[in-house]
Image 1 (tube, rainbow, N blue to C red):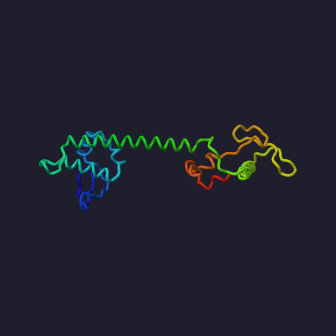
Image 2: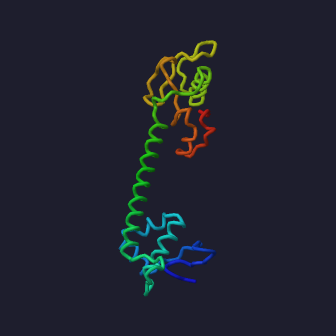
Image 3: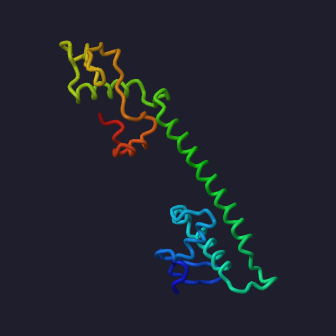
Length: 186
């Protein structure tokens, strides 16, 4: 049955399953009156949308009988406004937590979890892969190498190779289109 912008298939109790269709003008106006944008409405879970749709349908009922459990439009609007405010606060809190998590993960001063041997091997592999060695002794030991950032020549011991992300946070390699396993690949 087409109603209020959805193909509504009623199941047992108050549960409903939806297939998104264009919203009816009346429902769009109901959302606007409740200060809910269409984008916010579309971002809600099906359960939250179902609740708003039920409230809308109840508000459109021509005759509300006292004692039937029906709620006045004003009460519905207040509840929707309160839920919208709570939803926005929750969204802001999640956004703040995600920013905090990313800042912590990208903190360049965070301790690395490579051993000294692993760090030395990674350093040599980066210098060799990008052909940055300038002076090498007869045993193959790198004396000086060219920095990839400044292009200046430095003593081997003064250079520190680094990836886009810390070795301790390989999952962030996905932010750059790389696999977490690429963390050890120069």
